[in-house]
Image (cartoon, rainbow, N blue to C red):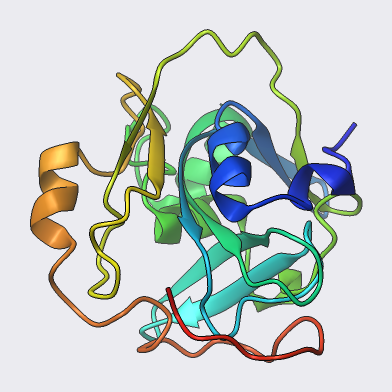
Length: 210
Protein backbone atom coordinates (compact mmCIF):
# COMPACT_ATOMS: atom_id res chain seq x y z
CA UNK A 1 0.00 0.00 0.00
CA UNK A 2 1.66 3.28 -1.10
CA UNK A 3 2.13 6.23 1.20
CA UNK A 4 -1.06 8.32 1.28
CA UNK A 5 -1.20 11.79 -0.19
CA UNK A 6 -1.38 13.39 3.24
CA UNK A 7 2.18 12.15 3.86
CA UNK A 8 3.42 14.61 1.22
CA UNK A 9 1.24 17.57 2.20
CA UNK A 10 3.86 18.72 4.69
CA UNK A 11 7.04 20.83 4.53
CA UNK A 12 9.71 19.37 2.26
CA UNK A 13 12.23 19.08 5.09
CA UNK A 14 9.92 16.78 7.07
CA UNK A 15 9.00 14.73 4.00
CA UNK A 16 12.66 14.24 3.09
CA UNK A 17 13.56 12.89 6.53
CA UNK A 18 10.51 10.64 6.69
CA UNK A 19 11.11 9.17 3.23
CA UNK A 20 14.28 7.52 4.53
CA UNK A 21 13.56 3.82 4.93
CA UNK A 22 10.56 3.92 2.59
CA UNK A 23 10.61 1.89 -0.64
CA UNK A 24 10.46 3.35 -4.14
CA UNK A 25 8.81 0.89 -6.53
CA UNK A 26 8.84 1.07 -10.34
CA UNK A 27 6.69 -1.14 -12.54
CA UNK A 28 7.54 -1.24 -16.24
CA UNK A 29 5.77 -4.02 -18.10
CA UNK A 30 6.57 -7.25 -16.31
CA UNK A 31 9.66 -5.79 -14.66
CA UNK A 32 9.35 -4.62 -11.05
CA UNK A 33 12.33 -2.92 -9.45
CA UNK A 34 12.50 -1.35 -6.03
CA UNK A 35 14.88 0.15 -3.53
CA UNK A 36 14.83 1.46 0.01
CA UNK A 37 15.39 5.23 0.11
CA UNK A 38 18.63 5.93 1.98
CA UNK A 39 19.36 9.51 0.92
CA UNK A 40 17.18 12.49 -0.02
CA UNK A 41 17.46 16.27 -0.37
CA UNK A 42 14.80 18.85 0.40
CA UNK A 43 14.29 21.92 -1.78
CA UNK A 44 12.15 24.70 -0.40
CA UNK A 45 11.42 26.99 -3.27
CA UNK A 46 12.73 26.31 -6.79
CA UNK A 47 10.55 28.11 -9.30
CA UNK A 48 9.49 24.98 -11.18
CA UNK A 49 8.76 22.77 -8.18
CA UNK A 50 5.20 23.51 -7.27
CA UNK A 51 1.94 21.63 -7.42
CA UNK A 52 0.17 19.15 -5.19
CA UNK A 53 2.22 17.03 -2.82
CA UNK A 54 2.72 13.41 -3.84
CA UNK A 55 3.24 14.07 -7.55
CA UNK A 56 6.46 13.01 -9.29
CA UNK A 57 8.58 15.73 -10.87
CA UNK A 58 11.07 14.25 -13.35
CA UNK A 59 13.39 16.28 -15.53
CA UNK A 60 16.53 15.86 -17.60
CA UNK A 61 19.50 17.45 -15.84
CA UNK A 62 22.42 18.74 -17.94
CA UNK A 63 20.93 16.84 -20.86
CA UNK A 64 22.22 13.58 -19.37
CA UNK A 65 20.52 12.41 -16.16
CA UNK A 66 16.84 12.07 -15.33
CA UNK A 67 16.17 13.18 -11.76
CA UNK A 68 13.18 12.10 -9.68
CA UNK A 69 11.61 14.47 -7.19
CA UNK A 70 8.54 14.08 -5.01
CA UNK A 71 6.60 17.32 -4.71
CA UNK A 72 5.90 18.26 -1.10
CA UNK A 73 3.31 20.57 0.44
CA UNK A 74 -0.05 21.79 -0.84
CA UNK A 75 -0.68 23.46 -4.18
CA UNK A 76 0.77 26.97 -4.23
CA UNK A 77 3.54 26.30 -1.71
CA UNK A 78 6.93 25.44 -3.22
CA UNK A 79 8.83 22.37 -2.14
CA UNK A 80 10.12 19.02 -3.32
CA UNK A 81 12.39 16.16 -2.34
CA UNK A 82 15.10 14.79 -4.63
CA UNK A 83 15.57 11.02 -4.30
CA UNK A 84 19.37 10.67 -4.21
CA UNK A 85 20.08 7.01 -3.39
CA UNK A 86 18.43 3.63 -2.90
CA UNK A 87 19.39 0.36 -1.29
CA UNK A 88 18.21 -2.13 -3.95
CA UNK A 89 15.70 -4.68 -2.68
CA UNK A 90 13.85 -6.07 -5.72
CA UNK A 91 14.71 -6.72 -9.35
CA UNK A 92 18.45 -6.45 -8.88
CA UNK A 93 19.26 -8.34 -12.10
CA UNK A 94 17.13 -5.89 -14.10
CA UNK A 95 18.68 -2.92 -12.32
CA UNK A 96 22.19 -4.25 -12.99
CA UNK A 97 21.42 -4.71 -16.69
CA UNK A 98 20.11 -1.16 -16.98
CA UNK A 99 23.09 0.25 -15.11
CA UNK A 100 25.70 -2.10 -16.63
CA UNK A 101 27.25 -2.77 -13.25
CA UNK A 102 27.34 -5.78 -10.96
CA UNK A 103 24.13 -6.44 -9.05
CA UNK A 104 26.01 -6.21 -5.75
CA UNK A 105 27.69 -2.90 -6.60
CA UNK A 106 27.12 -0.13 -4.02
CA UNK A 107 26.70 2.20 -7.01
CA UNK A 108 23.76 0.24 -8.43
CA UNK A 109 21.26 2.92 -7.37
CA UNK A 110 23.52 5.42 -5.60
CA UNK A 111 23.26 8.96 -6.95
CA UNK A 112 20.09 10.54 -8.37
CA UNK A 113 20.92 9.73 -11.99
CA UNK A 114 21.66 6.12 -11.11
CA UNK A 115 18.35 5.86 -9.24
CA UNK A 116 16.36 6.69 -12.36
CA UNK A 117 18.48 4.48 -14.63
CA UNK A 118 18.22 1.50 -12.33
CA UNK A 119 14.44 1.82 -12.01
CA UNK A 120 13.82 2.76 -15.65
CA UNK A 121 12.38 6.17 -14.77
CA UNK A 122 12.12 8.69 -17.61
CA UNK A 123 10.06 11.76 -18.48
CA UNK A 124 7.14 9.37 -18.97
CA UNK A 125 6.86 9.31 -15.16
CA UNK A 126 6.72 13.10 -14.89
CA UNK A 127 3.43 14.00 -13.25
CA UNK A 128 2.80 10.47 -11.94
CA UNK A 129 0.83 10.08 -8.74
CA UNK A 130 3.24 8.52 -6.24
CA UNK A 131 0.33 7.24 -4.17
CA UNK A 132 -1.06 5.12 -7.03
CA UNK A 133 0.01 3.71 -10.38
CA UNK A 134 3.21 2.17 -11.67
CA UNK A 135 5.63 4.43 -9.75
CA UNK A 136 4.93 4.54 -6.03
CA UNK A 137 6.61 4.99 -2.68
CA UNK A 138 5.70 2.41 -0.05
CA UNK A 139 6.01 2.68 3.75
CA UNK A 140 9.08 1.14 5.42
CA UNK A 141 9.10 -2.66 5.30
CA UNK A 142 10.93 -2.87 8.62
CA UNK A 143 11.39 -0.71 11.74
CA UNK A 144 13.20 2.57 11.17
CA UNK A 145 15.95 1.66 13.64
CA UNK A 146 18.66 3.73 11.99
CA UNK A 147 20.34 7.05 12.66
CA UNK A 148 19.75 9.97 10.32
CA UNK A 149 22.46 12.51 9.49
CA UNK A 150 22.05 15.83 7.71
CA UNK A 151 24.39 18.04 5.76
CA UNK A 152 24.68 20.45 2.83
CA UNK A 153 23.12 19.58 -0.49
CA UNK A 154 25.34 18.47 -3.35
CA UNK A 155 26.22 20.50 -6.43
CA UNK A 156 24.45 23.77 -5.64
CA UNK A 157 25.58 27.35 -5.02
CA UNK A 158 22.49 29.03 -3.59
CA UNK A 159 21.74 28.46 0.10
CA UNK A 160 24.52 25.88 0.17
CA UNK A 161 24.79 26.25 3.93
CA UNK A 162 21.32 24.79 4.56
CA UNK A 163 21.47 21.26 5.97
CA UNK A 164 18.72 19.83 3.80
CA UNK A 165 20.37 16.63 2.65
CA UNK A 166 19.46 13.63 4.79
CA UNK A 167 20.89 10.12 4.77
CA UNK A 168 20.98 6.90 6.75
CA UNK A 169 24.20 6.76 8.74
CA UNK A 170 26.48 3.88 7.76
CA UNK A 171 24.48 2.75 4.73
CA UNK A 172 26.86 1.80 1.93
CA UNK A 173 24.49 2.98 -0.79
CA UNK A 174 24.58 6.65 0.24
CA UNK A 175 25.94 8.62 -2.70
CA UNK A 176 28.36 11.04 -1.02
CA UNK A 177 30.12 11.19 2.31
CA UNK A 178 29.71 14.37 4.41
CA UNK A 179 33.25 15.42 3.45
CA UNK A 180 32.53 14.89 -0.25
CA UNK A 181 29.30 16.85 0.01
CA UNK A 182 31.12 19.75 1.67
CA UNK A 183 33.71 19.81 -1.11
CA UNK A 184 31.19 19.52 -3.92
CA UNK A 185 28.49 21.92 -2.71
CA UNK A 186 30.20 25.19 -3.74
CA UNK A 187 30.93 23.91 -7.24
CA UNK A 188 28.81 24.05 -10.35
CA UNK A 189 25.62 25.88 -11.19
CA UNK A 190 22.44 25.96 -9.15
CA UNK A 191 20.51 22.73 -9.35
CA UNK A 192 17.69 22.81 -11.85
CA UNK A 193 19.04 25.74 -13.83
CA UNK A 194 21.38 23.94 -16.20
CA UNK A 195 19.01 21.08 -16.90
CA UNK A 196 15.98 20.84 -19.14
CA UNK A 197 12.99 20.58 -16.78
CA UNK A 198 9.62 19.69 -18.30
CA UNK A 199 6.53 21.80 -17.94
CA UNK A 200 5.23 22.23 -14.38
CA UNK A 201 2.88 19.52 -13.19
CA UNK A 202 0.29 21.98 -11.95
CA UNK A 203 -0.61 25.58 -12.56
CA UNK A 204 0.17 28.22 -9.96
CA UNK A 205 2.55 31.00 -9.02
CA UNK A 206 6.28 30.76 -9.55
CA UNK A 207 8.65 31.16 -6.65
CA UNK A 208 12.24 32.21 -6.13
CA UNK A 209 14.82 29.47 -5.67
CA UNK A 210 15.94 28.58 -2.17
